[in-house]
Length: 213
Image 1 (spheres, rainbow, N blue to C red):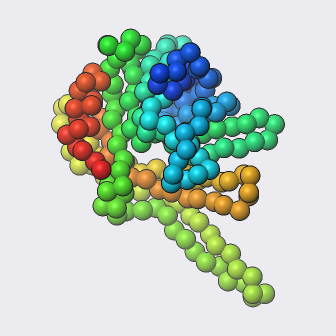
Image 2: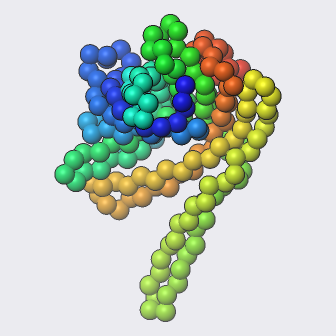
Image 3: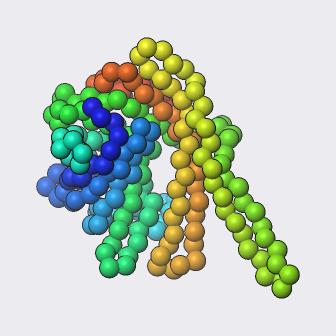
């Protein structure tokens, strides 16, 4: 399958296929971000009370360029942005992304990538692209500059079957209701890229093998 592109389709929480919402998945070789106008049913997030989190989001979406339908599974999904102007806009990010093949049947679904993150990985991988600079002014005013340059990916292993590497992503969130809270978060991911699509059973076996906690 073509692993990159823009996919528009229907998305729903696991077990709630009768309540799908429209959304667009922007997919690169390493990551995917889902944008919707309608929110999913909220699940409290103890680490960030303003944004919910979900164990699994399932979708069937069409590649806008190819016109082909694909299936997707997004695990451990957190809402990272909520904005309201004329329309309400919601942004979601998953720390385990399974990219589906053309076949949308659950039993035959195959995947090309596995994308993992964890607290221990975040503590162990040291490179960061975040730079913070305080600015002093002559009139006693001050400011803070945040600058981000994505670090180069770190290749760990490569053979004819797979490629394993660290990849870095940044996300920023703003609480538009209060207007005084901005969060900038960089996350290192362990990415596994497979030369040929593999089954969801194999994907989950790889996940258990790495056992990131």
